[in-house]
Image: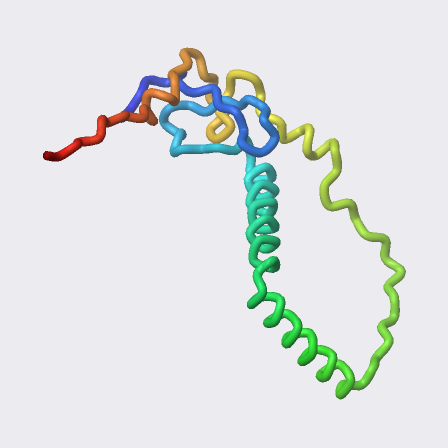
Length: 136
């Protein structure tokens, strides 16, 4: 389905809850305003899955066995002290770089074209409620 230039969607990011725009030609089911939001949200989901897994009895036993093997291997290796470096670490994510990556209002976050007329995303995801069939 192709749309003329300037037609798009105003979406709410699943991670930071801010609104962003995307043109109809670039839209492929996007949920996040940028890659940073997507990766932070996926990290959060991974932590939640990991926490659920760690609560199980079998996983606690596996973890205990893994730690026992690790401690045994650690004792058999020579202990080496590491020299510290004198280099200062560079900041990974600065606020200024984050703010400069903010999307312009009414511009597509993918191709940067201006989005004029907005379409509703909901019409793609209409839930149909079927009545249950009760047989004789």
